[in-house]
Length: 494
Image (cartoon, one colour):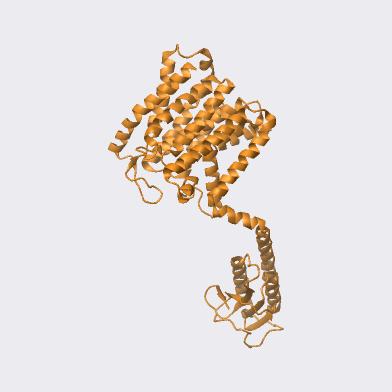
C-alpha cells in the first residue's frame, strides 16, 4: 500500500509541476486550439498538448519508484514485465495523436497506426479470451483484442469535447481499475494504474472548466489506449468468461458515446468520422445544462458505471446476468433522456413494419423492371404499369407512350389526392394519384427512376418499329388531365 500511495502522490506532484511548463511552451510555439463559435466554444486560444505532462508524470513516477528500489517489493517486479512492454505501443499511439494535434492527420492514418500499436500490445500478451458469458476461439482473440483496443482509444478521443470531460471520465475508470487490482491482488495492475490516476488528478486542476490547457488527441488517445490495455489485464484475472463486461462498464461513457455516434451517422448516411454536435455532452448542453454541469453529470454516470464494474468483478458469477441487465436498463433510460430523433424514427419504422414493407416494395420493383425490359408491346407495358399502381395503392393511373394513351380510375373517392407525374420523354409520361389519408408510398424515388428508365428505352424501341396497341385512348384527353410534362419528376396536390 505504501508504494501505491507514493506512486500516486509522486505522479500527482509531477503532473502539477509539468502542466504549467508545457502550457507556457505550447503558447509560445502556437500549439493552440482556436475557438470557432461552433463546436469549439472556449473564449481564447488554448494549448492542446495536455498529454505531454501526463505522460511525463506517469513515466517519471515509475522511474523514480524503481530507482528507489527499496520501496518496491518482489511481487511488483514480477508482475510488471507486460506493463513495461505496453509502453512502446502506447508511445506510438501518443505520438500519432500529438502529430494530429500539430498538423492534423486524416482519420484513416491514425486508425492504421492504432491498429499497429494494438498488434504490438497483442504480441506482448494483451489477449481477450472471453466475451460476455462465452470463451472465444483462439483465432478470434486477435481481431477481438484489436477491435477493443482501437475502439476504446478512439472513444476517449471522441468524448473529449468539454473542459475536463475526457480526463475526468478517464480518472474514474482508472480508479475502478486500480480498485479491481487491489481486490484481485494484482500488484502489477495496481502499480501501473496508480501513477495514471495521480497524473490525471494533477492535470484536471488545469483542465477542468474553465480549462487553461486541453488534453488533445495525443493525451486522449493515450489515456484510452492505456485503459483499454489495463481493462484486458483486469479481465484476465477474473474467474469468469464474463469478466470483460466489467471493464466495459468502467469505460461505458466513452464507449456508449462512440456507439451512438456511429449509429447516428449510419442512419443519417453521414461519414463516420465527420465531426458533429450530436455527442452525449452536446445533447446535455442543448437541453439547457451548462458545460460544467454537463461534465459533472457525466462524472456521476461514469461513477455509476465504475461501481457496476467493481461489483461485477467481485460478485458471484450467478449474479452477473442480473447486474448486466440492470446496467443495460440504466443505459437505455439515459439514451431515452437524451432524445435522439434518429433512434426514435428508426424504432417507429421497426414498430410499423416499415423496413419489411420497403424491402418488399424494392423487391417488387426489381421484378417489374425485368418484366418491362422483356415487354414486346405497349399493351404489355400498360398492364405492368397498372399492376404497379395497384400494388402501391394509387387511386388513378395514366400512361402516354409512343403516341398511345391509357388511363384507369382504380378507386372512387372524393378525397383530395396528390399527383405524381414521371416524365418518360418530351411528350410521354406516367401519371399516378394517391389519397392523402392512405399510407404513404415507401419507394417513390426508386419507382420513378425505374419507370423513367424502363419506359424511356421502350419508347425508343416502339418508335423505331411498327407497334400495335389495343385498349389505348386514341388522342383523347385524360380525365383530370395532367399538366404539361416537366423535365423532372413532379409531385403536386390536387
